[in-house]
Image 1: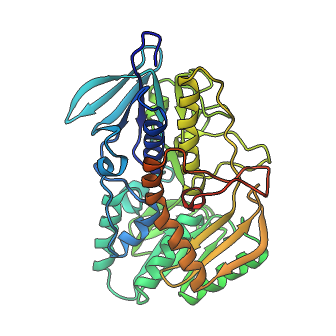
Image 2 (image 1 turned 180 degrees about the horizontal axis):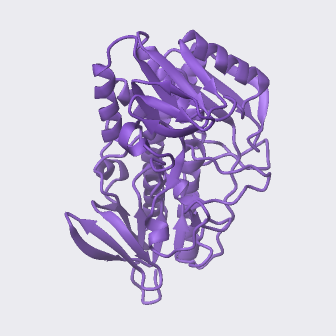
Length: 403
């Protein structure tokens, strides 16, 4: 309760994996001491893990946010415009009209966006997997593309690898090129990198490594060294950027524009502002591992952000976010996959899981993300995750392990 005996007002901004989980955990564990509002313009949770499937014509199930988060959470369909922690006010826009939502605490979990402005021509001449609408536009473009045409997927990270694999598996009649500025699979073990290259080769994916894209042009990719290749369709998976809400609000941010937070996920300048998921510049973990923009770390960060808010509600000192990695799972189409096992510090072990079993493993993890929000709603506090420093870690839910 607040000092005057009324319920505290806790607002969660962003209805993705981290935000939705934070909202249900808060509403369930606060036990009537807080009113929890989830601010999100979309009516459905966007499963970014499945946008490459949507782009290749597969049916992807929708999840209504209001039903998913339950009656304890108030769902407000609006876009957050500005955060004023000193006044305890969140400015939101609904159908062109600006209003304010008061708060005692705010959890910022707005996620990240595809960096469409990183290279000239990307916004004008490339497709992306930034949201369902973009994935559907890519789906239509792929449907209209005649056989033997070249599709260039730019970005050697997991998003690019999975997108290139999915396109190659769905349209084996196309030429699919995966363009990477560095060596593909650089974060994998030697065995993992070798398996990755081999399995992409089986799908017919051409690898263009060590080439940094300088510009996306109509019908071509221009590289930094002066060369270029002809392409018929470009898919940009060249990394993520911060949402503008934090910087636009004048909150302290890191050089990337992410909310600057301490180890408890509180803003470094405002105790009533908490960050979660890809929106926060989460400090390195005690074992030296860095937070990666994955569901594997994002959902636990949302749960911990809720725990930090609850500690502050009780007048307690929040605990640091303690998280350890387990794996780096990759889908390579629907029938193949690669799971790189890692230690808690995210360092690759030599052992990998590949093939059909790896594809099933990754699919089970992906399927578990949304149900884990339901489990948390029904059993508040149920979602747990591995510790950074203990191999005999706490029980990890499927949500905490999803990649």
